[in-house]
Image 1 (cartoon, rainbow, N blue to C red):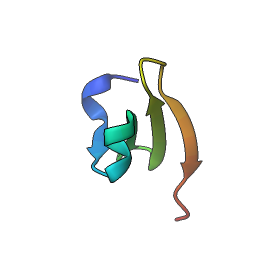
Image 2 (cartoon, one colour; image 1 turned 45 degrees about the vertical axis):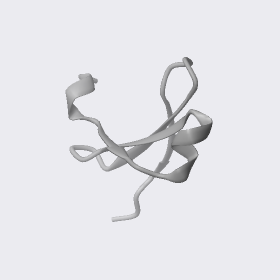
Image 3 (tube, rainbow, N blue to C red; image 1 turned 180 degrees about the horizontal axis):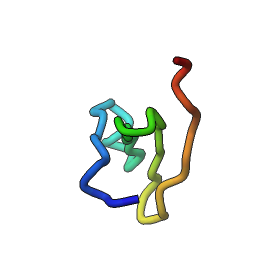
Image 4 (spheres, rainbow, N blue to C red; image 1 turned 90 degrees about the vertical axis):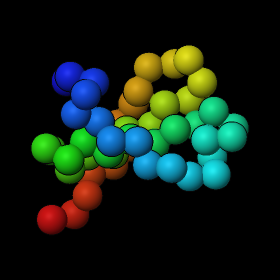
Length: 46
């Protein structure tokens, strides 16, 4: 998946280097912790 399709969701967890991303084309959420690669969290119910 191309990285330009991800939208970052701002949360206070960003201060702890935990970032949450939303992929609008497929309605999926991803989490990134530190320098590790993104992993899928859960899908949004349609």
